[in-house]
Length: 167
Image (cartoon, rainbow, N blue to C red):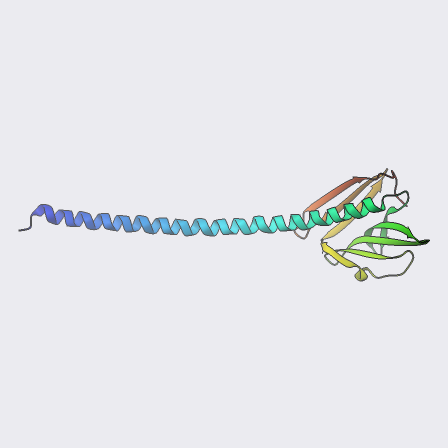
């Protein structure tokens, strides 16, 4: 013998089951959306961090080179075939050698060679990626700026211990 009460409970149980299923499905869909959005944000942060790391590493490399060459008249900013460059010179056994640091075709480049020797901008070795490079020397203060591949500019400011740079 089935009472009316039993039949109405069966209908309520089905509704409760359906409600639980919809609630669980909504939770699953929202979880997937949160994971996808989080992954996208992580990729953006990681890409920005990698770009920032590469630019700062290049600036640290340049700072080390400048500190090693910091002597009166050894550091200058020059123009090489239309590219602005930082020139670091040193005398080895009576022969002057120059290290040029410049941007060429989306890369930060370095060339080391005897002073006065002809060379092409493509002959340098790649330090890293760079959309642009600028250097300015004024009253013993060297400013070096690198435009990253992402379009952000990072600047290095160094006060030369020698107090001066070359022409």
